[in-house]
Image 1 (cartoon, one colour):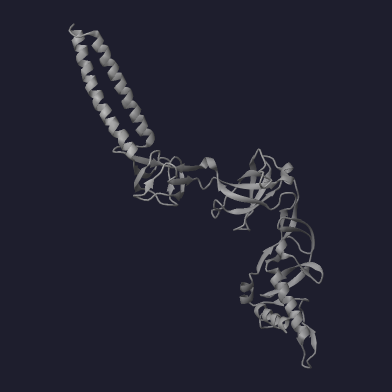
Image 2 (spheres, one colour; image 1 turned 135 degrees about the horizontal axis):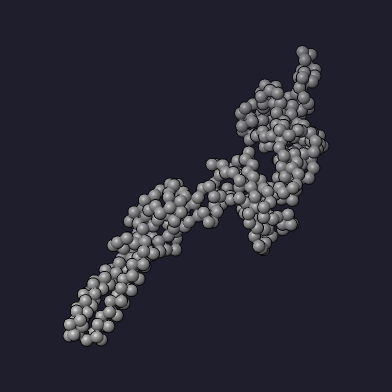
Length: 379
């Protein structure tokens, strides 16, 4: 029978070869209950546990009312992030930093040879030469007027020409200063803030564009969680509300925070409200762009909770699997669950806080237990 072959294959994969069932056979071939074992207890090998992706966690308290498990994402604070691009197009002649490098404010990032800056530099050189000649002519006119030889009108015209050239030189100097040019059309790109180079699009010889940032610098200590609050829950949201952020990559982290910003309008596409949460403490493993869940706390109570994936139905009752006394042992324990909030059930009865429980792979264990029972009945 195909079903019988499938059952035996699953049994061979999931259960250890040594004593997988909770029953035994005496010397007369009659079955009896395993001495000191729990009903439904399963014995798995280390290989089977690893292959099945079984994970064990602990029962803990969570906020489960109106906002538990809200989707959230970590991101650098906008005011602590700088996008650096040249103010004139050109070509990178030097890149002075590397991706991931820590830089100080004012530190050189790169130099860019710019045609526009070279032209402005040439114009400045010419304007300075004309200014020098005009200043010499002005001095002569003043001497002539002082000797009663020169005309007053010529003196006024010379003074006007010098004033105009001085204004031109000053304007070109300021323009080159704004562009970051030192000399010869070389633009200096400097870090406007202290931080870490988190993105860079610059290599020597590459074209430098004013439209694309060559470097992005961010303060790694200034990172916030941005959450999306469903429309039905926005009545509970306000600035100063306490929260807990749990990154998906590190579910053991529970980072407290406070809502610092609430968007003035609901997103018409997602029908949710954006909030920004400042975290009270940071973990060096956190990265901008990480996803996680955001719990709104406020004054609400925190309940014992179980991941929804850990709850299965065994003999018509909601149950979870817990590790046994020996390595590789698991047994089902009936529990009473309450309301569901996101990816968690409220735990009303069955286990205490801190109790060890299977949080991933419960359905595999249930299938293995069912296969074991079927194999026993087929003998």
